[in-house]
Length: 249
Image (cartoon, rainbow, N blue to C red; front, side):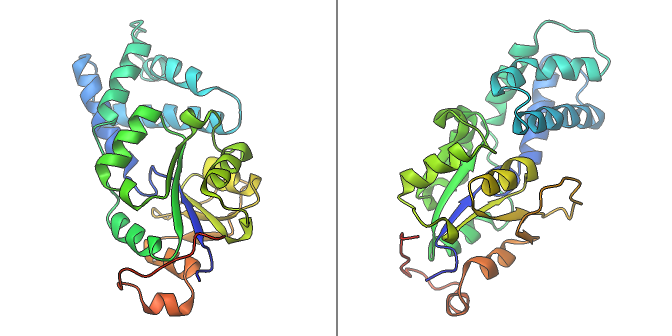
């Protein structure tokens, strides 16, 4: 039996390359509105968007407010006049984002291996329509025992209530055998900690932790995750298919 018999995984920049998807969707949307859509525009938007999602994780803003105001804030940060089309720009951006299911290299292979020994589920804060399409089209969904999106559940990371819902729905009672894996310290790691779970920070870009949130583990590759989840004998069988795992955790 694995060390962790249930692994909860964030989606964006944990399994799917959100940065690539964001860049392409933003570029296409800004071009449609005949606005600057170069690298500088992407950098400005990314900073504005990151600040808003961090504010959401801290409970300072609602997701509805985030979606309603982020392009108004972007226009201001970019030194562009407010065209009054911020909400419409956001809707179009979300439509385009849903069409980009860019995988992080090795993600599906990792899910296949982890699914041999543990119950897997995604836990995401993204918009429901966008995330459902990307999780499905990327091939991630077929490895999951559950797909949970905060907008659909009605509560977002880092609230423990989201994880309570996920674990109850999966039938998991022993939280000591559950590992929360994600790239966002304020949402994924803090959320896992709030729910009494062990946490693993996905740090593929070798970034510095400038927060007070300290994960139990930090990984720089999916292979390192195997070492945390699997017992030695299971590690020896990586690549062997049709192994059985227990859903009891």
